[in-house]
Amino acid sequence: MKKENLFVILTGVVIGIAALVLTALGNPANMGFCIACFERDIAGAVGLHSAAKVQYVRPEIIGLVLGSFLMALASKEWKARAGSSSALRFVLGAFVMIGALAFLGCPLRMVLRLAGGDLNAVVGLAGFAAGIFLGTIFIRKGFTLQRNYATKTLDGTVLPVVMTGLLILFLAVPTLFKLSEEGPGSKHAPFFIALVIALVVGALAQKSRLCMVGGIRDLVLFKEPKLILGFAAILVGALVCNLILTSMTGTSYFHLGFADQPVAHNDGIMNFLGMGIVGWGSVLLGGCPLRQLILTGEGNSDSAVTVTGFVFGAALAHNFGTASSAKGPGANGVVAVIACYAVLLIVTLANVKASKE
Image 1 (cartoon, one colour):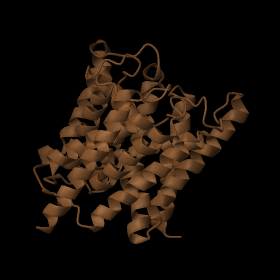
Image 2 (cartoon, one colour):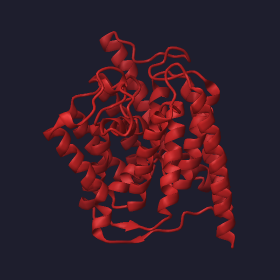
Image 3 (cartoon, helix red, strand yellow):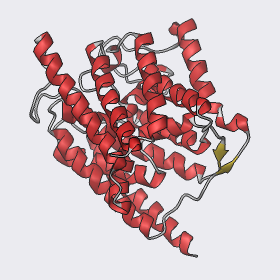
Image 4 (cartoon, one colour):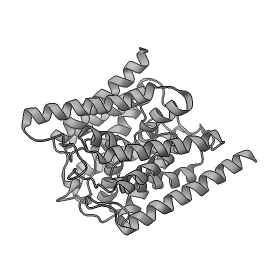
């Protein structure tokens, strides 16, 4: 096996183990890492939405960006770049987040839910794969967000600096932020332990180029299995840890079935369609929510705009009631998902047409 493939597998195993460590230390069940959920929590903490149960400054997001930033600097891979359809990336980022919150999780959490025995995540995975496959069809037909270009160093450091500022501000004046007293936002691992773990994961993800969307995309387009190995390694690492923790603690970290899963619902149609949006939108963006954070750390301002779109989408989902709950999706969520598909189709077709002119 190639050395780079082994490193991707190692990174996946570390992420799977790290996620279960964070869960054991206080993060919500099957949510050691969730890019969508944690960005939503940060959006709430800074007052962008008022859903009281999902507000917290998640150090995992800060650590992922800064870990990638430090590793990129150390390996001389950091490069400021921008200019690739930034406005469209913002919109696509918002759509991806709306889809993720309809499912209640990003692609990374989908895998962690699978490892915890949540069969609703199997339905989500089917939708995710279908969305990616649909996106690759349009990529083959000419969809492109155009290449980016080298830009000023300052541009590439904006989001890492913002994350650093958020970290300092939260530690210095935590009373400035809205923090959940109950619900998923109130459940979290010790702040500094979570931050250190995320720094390590961010560094490894930067070096391995791990991407949840890229694994399926590359297999479909190029018959390249490297990134899908990381996807599988996360699943295996988390599954083994779930079983070990269950046997050691007496607390069930693995519950096989559709019903009574933590921070999840069993509406199969919305699980499929929500992750379909995530797959479709992410493949057009060139990477999953985790990968966008890592690219931001590498100096990619276009990914920084995408991440901003994620946060905006999270605020939008909770302010307009489109996010699902453990009881299932609401009427607004169904309308939002249908609207996302319609707009994604229009945007994609218009882009393909423009690329041929």
